[in-house]
Image (cartoon, rainbow, N blue to C red; front, side, top):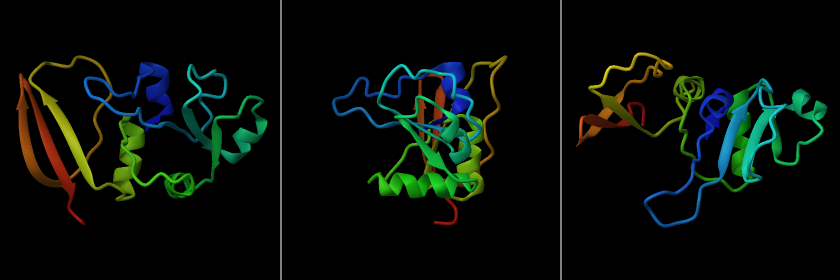
Length: 148
């Protein structure tokens, strides 16, 4: 799952690479309708947007309505669609929404020694570090939610 800004800025593939298996269901959280003018490149994207915005859209066959209580409404929809587990890939606003609602089990943070001169600040998160992986010049922190 990604947020609308990540879709607009990065248009990520969100597919299986360097591994075998079925591609995951691609999900975009778009409560403000930023993607209303976008014709999504693939039909396997699900876009969750506000009910009132969805009613105004002509091409909404792959779009699904959420209420003002965005995260609980999204999770309720996904549960009804038989989705039992999700990977929230980003961006920062989407990640922070799940963190603030305390609706996360584990987190993988990739840190680099390289100087990043531009981009979006990472969300703020606290958790129990369960594992540290060194991969080239990067460090991956594997964390669990403190309240679980």
